[in-house]
Picture (cartoon, rainbow, N blue to C red):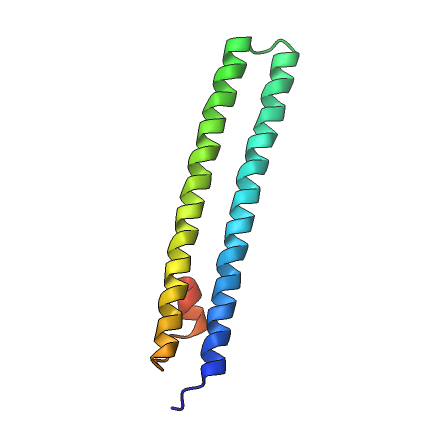
Length: 107
């Protein structure tokens, strides 16, 4: 089989776009989840259903969870960047990459 640099670079490009899309979607969903619960807790507090302490505790717990999830997502993205770097090195060495489907499903 002939080695086609353009095909391999296209695989890398699609993989990197997929990784970036997952990062953006995950971060957006995490923040939307936090804001949604913040509104819920504020509504419950405003309606005198929960106390000020409960409101502060709930917001704090969800804030810490949001920060943790954001860090986790960004670490996963850094691993994808390392994978992309390795893929580029493989192309430089004229080694063929796995199929695009295999690249995307292994992450």
